[in-house]
Image (tube, rainbow, N blue to C red; front, side):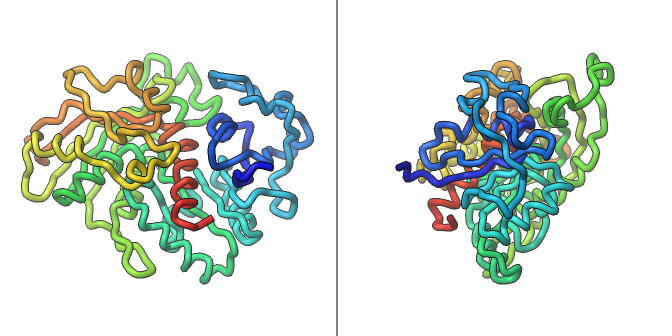
Amino acid sequence: MSNKIQVTVLGATGAVGQRFVRRLANHPLFQIAHLTASDRSAGKHYQDACEWRLDGEPFAGLGACILETSDPGAAFGPVVFSALDTDIARELEPAYARAGALVFSNAAAFRMEPDVPLLVPEVNPEHLGLLEGQRKTRGWSGGILTNPNCTTTVLVMALAPLHAAFGVEAVLMTSMQAASGAGYPGVSSLDLMGNVIPFIKGEEGKVEVETAKLLGQFEGSRVVEAPVAVSALCHRVPVLEGHTEAVSVRLKGDPSPEQVREVLAAWKPEPQRLGLPSAPALPIRLHEAENRPQVRRDVELDGGMSVHIGRIRRCPVLGIKFSLLGHNTERGAAGGSVLNAELAKVYGCL
């Protein structure tokens, strides 16, 4: 009999759902008990309802599993990983939380609710403290924890050690975002090939508001948002996986590029100290070469869970600027959510 925690994956056939399945198939703490899909796919074998699009063993060895409906009235594990679209998540995730499941959500539906942790374990593990108040206020025995937007996740991984060491005052970020961030099939190839699209619906606003919450302080029973001004410009580019961000930041005390590099190199946050299974040994990989980081050469390192920083130099406007890269569907989605669950277990929330 396995001592692993039984988990449910909602939306298992989609792009993020498949990455959940692959990550969880041989996880040391969690075991997949239920895979759910839409009503038209429920009752089918996973391999018959899903076009597997990832490397490695097809369907992560779970092709014969029978897909279930996303119904909290049916069987489910005490941990639920949600790869649902936002509109569906808004309805179903609270139902699972009321039924007793702790839901780790990738959707935007509840990210900015004041009692819902918006979590990147290296950045703000103390925000798990919001769960206690959430359960009392809403009368849930379970709860909801959320990932940030994938672009925000990459950005705050770079900002968090700088904010702790110096204090971040203002950020200007221009993103070049992979096609996979739009899901499958995503943006039409005729629109994206040989092109850059300077608009991603809702993306800039998410980055600007989520960053302040993530860098905020947990005080008593609430998060006091950081007084950080963020301006985001988001673009879709013809890259498969990996979001590249050009970042300029104003830091208190006007530190030098060498001081910034030293802080980033020394950063060893909570998941790395705890040795969580999905935590990369180096949360930030620093690059010396002038032409790095690059998507094709760097983004898959560490299972996509580290972020990459290069070209740290003076910015004549804000003080410091650098190039930043992260894996949008691993660190920014499935992998980040699994790491959230690992942290929640260690903190006694499961």
